[in-house]
Each structure stands twice: as C-alpha cells, then as structure tokens.
Amino acid sequence: MAKGNSPLSLASPDQKLAFAKRCSHEGVIAGTKAAVVASVASAIPTLASVRMLPWARANLNHTAQALIISTATAAAYFIVADKTVLATARKNSFKQPSNSEA
Image 1: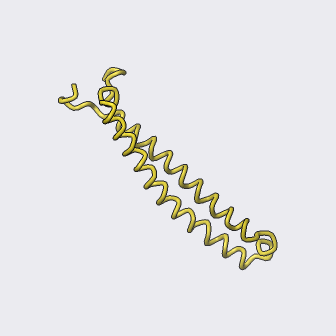
Image 2: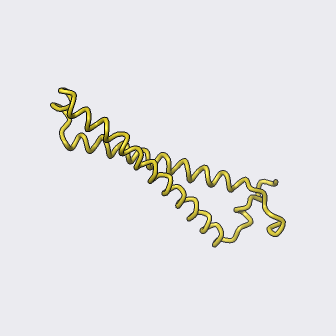
Image 3: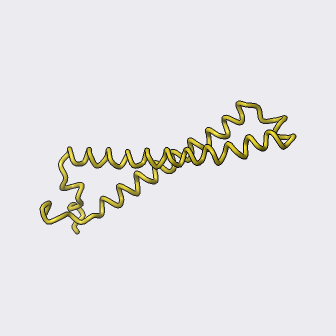
C-alpha cells in the first residue's frame, strides 16, 4: 500500500468525523470501566488501612483518603482511554481499502 493510500486519506470528511467519534467513544467506555475497577481497587485498601494501621489513622484524614482514591481513578481512566483511542486508530489505519474504495 502506498503511503498516501490509507483508508482515512480516501475517506470523506464525514467518514473521518464518524471514525473519530467512534474511536473516542470506545476510549470513553474502556476508560470508564477501568476507572470503576481502579476506584474499588484503591478504596478498599485505603479505607481498610485507615481503620487498622495507627499511622494511617493519625495521618490520613478524609481529604487525603479521597485524594488517594480519586488520583488512582483518574489515572486509570486517562491512561486506558488514551491507549484505547490510539489502538483503535492504529488498527483501523492499516486496513486495506476495499475494492469499492480503490
């Protein structure tokens, strides 16, 4: 395949916009799922440690606990969403154009 003959270079602007919306939607869905898992995975040990460990009880107030949980959640969302969008775009950019497009 020549460098300028990728499916996106042959697509109309409406097709490119639909492709971008689909890629970003897949990223949002995957990021949301990862954020839910990360919030549970970080909340359980954080809240358990505050109840059981004297150091955590003395030094981690409610704000610190919320910050730990929300940081893990936000990081998981953005990392997974970004990787999903890039993977989807990469996967679809290397597809061979069909005979009707050529």
